[in-house]
Image (spheres, rainbow, N blue to C red):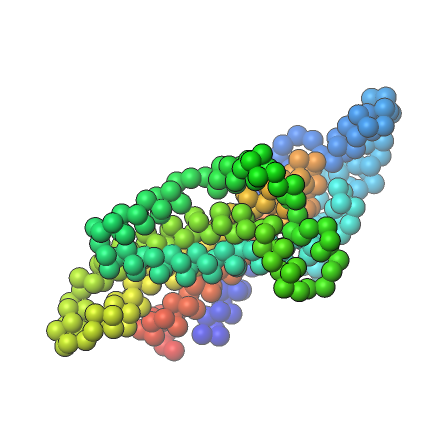
Length: 336
């Protein structure tokens, strides 16, 4: 197992290197840079004439290496990451990119993990319920729920919920994790409840899509497994139906869902990102969109690299979980 994990991690290094090149090139492809943002700010907010604003922008470009060729900017960025774990300087936030990431990534990961756990537990449980009551009203109702969860865009659902919160229920504290009175307060049960009242739309929307997928896959796989010969043999031995389902059928039906864990963390991250952009929460989503809008290239590239890393980590975790679930599976074709 250790050898497998080590080889996967080593194999991920060149993949991440390639992804960093492609990501950096795509981000730099559109015309313009942060110097244009400086020029626009000077003209629109400071009333500076266009010629002087452009001169100031050019000075900023020279001072921050924005006039260097893209390949020079890329190698300066990637060299700093490899040698000093330095992700560069954020032009917009005027601080190290690593500090920007550390401020926003933990909350994003925590929300994504909560959504993933809820989506997995609820989706698997409801999938078992639907499969064991095939063609009943319960199965039909859960099928409608899963269809809606897989087809309604998450950003659209976020906009609908935001509309009702603001214009129908007159909720004013939108786009924040806590009410003002809990901003610097120590953790308590009241503060936790206040947090939940602010972030429940993010958890609900991101969980809804993952739950729908888990439920559909679990239902389909469990129906196949329930018709297998070894399940019929277990029934013939006189085992209770509950034991047949939970001890013999469900573990084998879980295999595709375990393999799905390789992409579920990035999926939950993107779900959180979409909803956070609509609600304006201080997480990764608004930071990515904002940095792309102003040309803060190092922030955008770093966040995209982090998302790619989560995809690779998720795939490694899914392989390990698959072996833990079914010892017959061997990683890398070897013996455990």
